[in-house]
Amino acid sequence: MKSRESVLRLKRFQVQEKARQVAQIETMISEFNRMSEDLDGQIAYEEKKAGIDDINHFAYPTFAKAARLRRENLETSINDLREQHAAAKLALEEVEEELSKAEMKEQRDGKGIETPEPTPEVDRAAMIG
Image 1 (cartoon, rainbow, N blue to C red):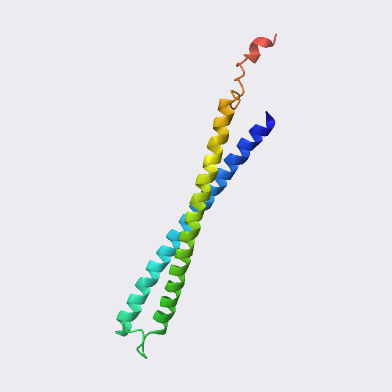
Image 2 (cartoon, one colour; image 1 turned 60 degrees about the vertical axis):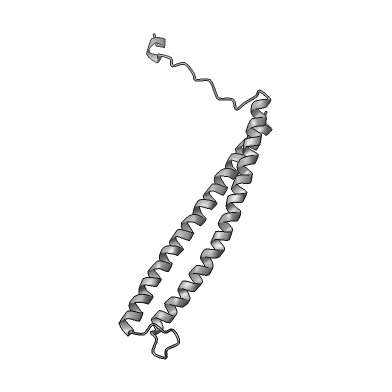
């Protein structure tokens, strides 16, 4: 039945799309973590170079202050992405469950996903005269 096939195709597409979103969020989280670690190194370098690690000191390096602010913003973004990641994984699991149910229903009804039968190889040279 065409409608069941299209439902299965739709469910498969939804699973692929949700999986892509989960992977994209994971990539963003890892990239933000890397950027945060880079900023940690830059902050440490600036503090060592200036010999001042007290943020409230009047001569604390301006670049280190800016890098700290940027790192805090990245940490906030990472936490937001983790929440989005959890929601996306939950949505993926739901769609996978729906797909599984649809596939089991298709198999139970005995109709299964029809695969075209392979066409026998014909020796075309033998057909020509």
